[in-house]
Length: 105
Image (tube, rainbow, N blue to C red; front, side, top):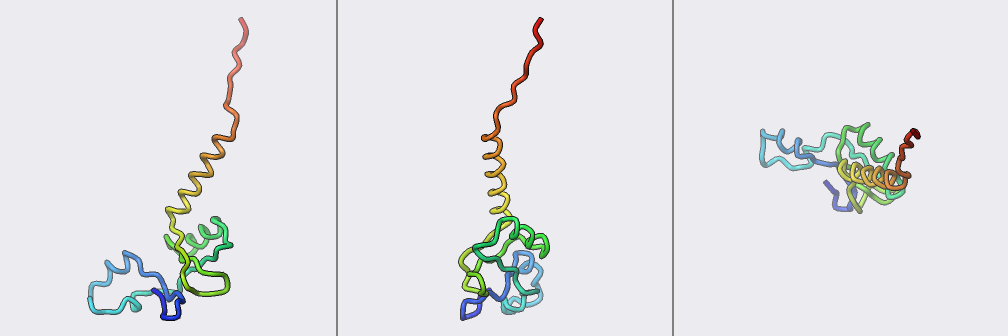
């Protein structure tokens, strides 16, 4: 959720929506459980992954450093895994193949 000035209020998850059964007219703002975890463009994938683990979150809004918005992107758990998959593939392709020497005779 985003304030009128563009700052991030929080993230409402699918679970939050499914658990909010008591009042369909309740504003989304009421479903926000905690301050959002935010990352900045200069953060590494490792830092984003660490923050996801610490917060138990599967997505993080990306905002300009030193701000709380506007949102310029979102990093998801799937994004991190895709980047890791690419890195592993690049490492495999960069390694020389293993060759086995046969004993003579």
